[in-house]
Image: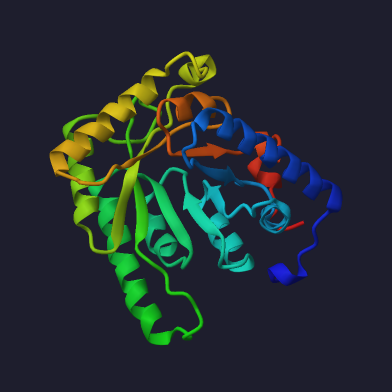
Amino acid sequence: MSHMEMKIDSQRAAALVSQIKTVRERIAAVANGRDVRLVAVSKLKPANDILALMQQASPPQLHFGENYAQELSQKAELLPRSVHWHFIGGLQSGHCKNLAKIPNLWCVSSVDTEKKAQLLDKHRGEFLASFSSISEPSTPPPSKLNIHVQVNTSGEASKSGCAPGPDTVALARIVESSPNLHLLGLMTIGAIARSVATTPENENEDFVALREQRDLVQKELGLDRELELSMGMSEDFEGAIVMGSGEVRVGSTIFGVRGPKSEAKITV
């Protein structure tokens, strides 16, 4: 099946378009004129939903986030190359090769070790070299992979991410020096309790910590560009934007509650 054969339910599409419009309005209300990227988290939701938002939202929604490498790969095969895919789940070393070969993978937001950064750089480089030799002139070439270094700002053992301080700076330095990667910024998934308590007026400790880490990395690496902050999800994205987030990841507020992974379908 290709996206040309995919059916879109008109009622479902209308609901999705309405829900993403509301999220965009909520973002704009607190963004103070900044252009904040909305990543629609489509994990465990069918490709039909993604296609509906690409075709019927105004402007089209192009940035989509996935948590599972295999699911992302399957959806990328089905959907147009104009999708900007974000891998936002826990990254395993064994996933790096396949992810790096998805032409329109726009960003990997969960890089937390030197080994994973090196694997992504190696395999993206191999893919770019092979793509240039076999691609059609009309096909847009893939580019370097954008990377967010994931920081464990809450210190929870259950959370992935670098420890704040020297570890974060060291990994950012490796990504910055990798020829096939681009250091886009830092990402955190903070403590749930802090997320629930976050309002535009109530600062989240994890967001404060990530901003401090971003400033530290820029200073230590001597960067003349500002690294972005990727923080904020359905429960707390407005507070994250007020704290300077340049990207928010919103799933259930757009797509609705997810069922169990065992019942998820790539298409419906």
